[in-house]
Image (cartoon, rainbow, N blue to C red; front, side, top):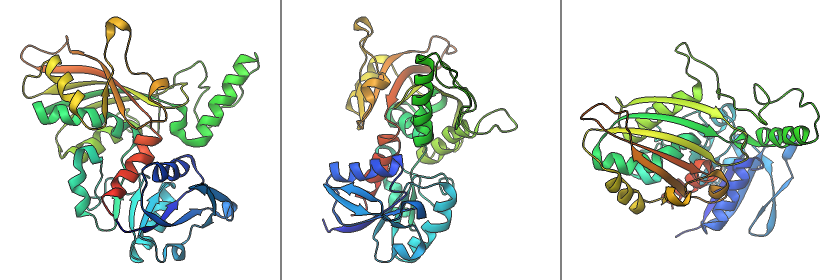
Length: 336
């Protein structure tokens, strides 16, 4: 495996920092690291393999000689700079939303559609974190029984809003514990500590948020199911790390709970934690800082109409690792 020059666009952010850790953990063949950041972080070192590597300015010329770019920047930065990287011969794996629904850009969860990587034209998109966490267990069930409908409620951690979200929740918890007023809450619409916020992103004319539409639109593209029926509700919860999801799947063909459990136990990227009698089920505390999607509470959907095969389950996964950084590095492994 030949060594590569790897750039990380947005190397000082939460996802960029996690990408560095994942590259190191997975022994990715990095010959030279090029950490890129905004002007205020130029010269600031990031740690990789025990050494400090100073950040360079994120600009077009910084991609000269780069083989692979891992993008962890905002949409505007990705749109401005990643095409420049491609012009200079790099292949980009981008975590922003900028290119996900472009028809000529593969949108990839390696456990689902790794074959799509081969069709790239220089940019491969990393899906939304909640989409990745949900599809890793949904896909093997679809392969067995043919998915027709997906009903999802997500419970998304504060750090899904980046470092500002994480810092804000910590600040609010301290205020509440001290009996002090929380005051203005940013980047959230309302105080998150001791609260739930049923809005992530802006609303469309149908009353769905942009985060909820990502699950539909990205899921359809990744699984090559353009007519899949999807209904999603996304909720921000006062959890530091790891998203949770309640998922109901309807299928074309019968699928028993026992069959589904066996399928999930053999599925890549999944760990079944499902012992109701012992109160064992997935929880954010247990799924943080690791890469598997934990699945439990697997049961038959009692509300399904006669003749409709439907199952419900609960899953949790680290949205910074598998929901972003690890998924991107997994994609990059197909490029070496």
